[in-house]
Image (cartoon, rainbow, N blue to C red):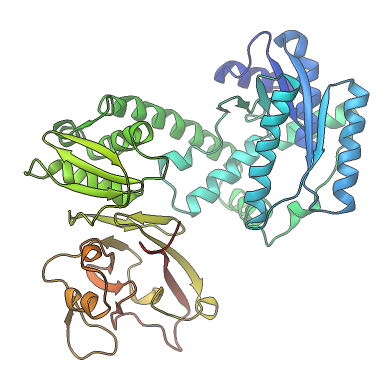
Length: 452
């Protein structure tokens, strides 16, 4: 049996417990097809769901007269359906336009919900949006949590159309003779989501799986459910003010990492705990000694007997405890000691110029598997411009790296060899040249003496 648009919304609401009797729901309406269908769909379902519907619209002012006409269109919708509304204009601050516009929009929706007395905020995300999000995250190398995609519910934000596809949406609008606004920036192929929506996703569906969008959305459901289960299992090891070292050693590594992160969210600082910090804390818990500490954002985590405890305060001296983590493309890697590194790939012509803060690597001369770790006794590399192998300890001393920072100074390795000592030296391996076509770019985003 083919589900109608309204049937699919009902099923999604029931499955994820998105709405309850008596809810006052704010519909986020941009004027596009999905948001118009959301508003009208909720209005048609309000009696059976026993809900009240209000609406809100934010004009970002990014598209000139088009934005103004969108605002007028939404205002007319509110009048036609006699729906209480809040409509505002805003200005997107400098920075990444997409990210800043999204942040501004959700801040506005929270304010609008408070002003209109709504306890739920509904957005018009569809199954196709979910598929695009999951595919983008696959391409970026996301893990299980990232592959969970768009959540049906987060706080008071709900997404009742997440199981609806765009054909259902358009069919619903056409059946009711409804119009909608078109945002032509969605066809800007300079934007990665537009390239996925109009290029990669249709091509992959055509060549491999005509139901690819449904498969990716199903993958997101499975990843979220498994992620939630793993969180519940890890919670056993994350209770209380301190982490038990024996428990971290007893449980499997994936659960131990989750336990550390869950404990950090409750007991740590408000700053993000990087992948390298998590591994360093696991290694601290596994040490035979009952003492030691790791510098973390906002303070230190100290081992006190059989427990790890967070102590807030100024950045502490480097720990010297061994740590090693993979460097994942397109993700900022935060390391103990306050370093931040980023790995990206680029055509050789767009790679830029190497420097103390930028290392360029011929992508065809390495495996592409990079790791980052701190210094070990005896570490050496064949430094570019120097004869023979040189010790990392001597390089750091020559570059006048403070002694307290040397033990946690990051080293970038490829295929088991030290490739780069950020700010100090580059090995003579996998250098770019006239024949280079693809580059890995390893960038030092932040060092300990820079503000975040």
